[in-house]
Image (cartoon, rainbow, N blue to C red):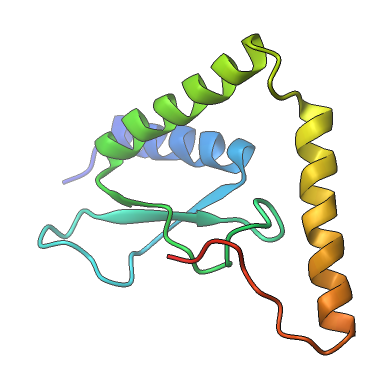
Length: 115
């Protein structure tokens, strides 16, 4: 049985995922345990991935650890001044623009990374 603390943990992890451009879903090919979940890109966030790319598959506890790692990497790159929010937004907008141009030309939109 699930307690209220587990519900609060799920809500907190969902908020963290939303801030990073992810959504939680049921994996296409779940593992043997029934508690598996997956993380996928949200709407038009993370434009280099296809919308159905499963970026992570595991349990809620494993997801929390993975999210901390992703956040640590992002913060580390900011400390090194390799990236900032403006650079990220500009690059993502460029990818979206290229995809839109290909779509308008009736060309197949090639996803750079597909899992």
